[in-house]
Image (cartoon, rainbow, N blue to C red; front, side):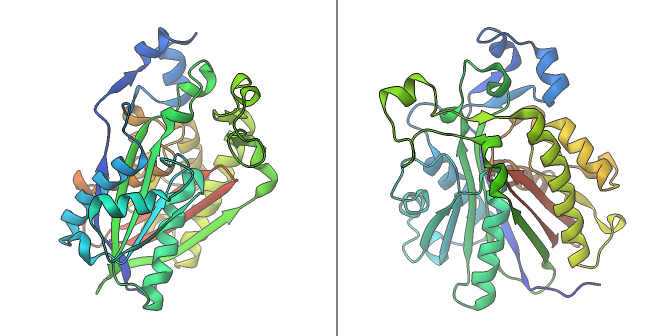
Length: 328
């Protein structure tokens, strides 16, 4: 049995906007169909945050539920890490805005940008802070308003994304916890998935707006191949680091990118489909929030029980990827 790390997740929470955008709605917006979307992505509907609702609000709501499930008050949190590529604004950080909303006056906070892998990165970072003894109780949040960077005139990308947030509370645990982590990145393939406008290279201008550079741009077929390869690699390497094999895994909670990607990853990892947790049909791709929301839902649905071994596995822009093996 692998060595216990002593650092684990003690509470999870999620928040989803109430507005539902289904495939029938998208048929009225772009040249697409429910059959086309379902066949290629597995997505039936997604949630859309209304005006005035952004990453900080959603992240704070998810965090409140995670704190409640962990039996902690916001004042006991030392560290807030928010993974997001759709922050409320360039600065201050979304974590600082969430800290204020929660009243977590003791906590320090910062954001990370690792796209769809952000929640995996955030948990790994928090683990190191807790292991060092610098902080005791950490909040890790994945919160995204992907609808704000979605080009609703591009039928290839607008069908994919949704909004939402998930959160977890981490601290030292007496049993189980994180058994191993594995992270990767490769900037050579950065152009495969990006928002070209709005940064210091191409700041907002009439030209960048006219060219629709403030929306997500994706090279779908190339990204598909990389996602399958790297998610499988991350899961297998994380398992190897913890001394486990596929048969030891009770549930895999992957980033909900595309149903065909997930089935291909399962096949590559020699995992039966029933061990792959799915909610992509209801929410689509929520970037860093996907894995966070899926974990919270799996806990709520009692798909995870004490002693289970689970894998969180994700891939995103950067390129970034990573996996975490946890004994619950």
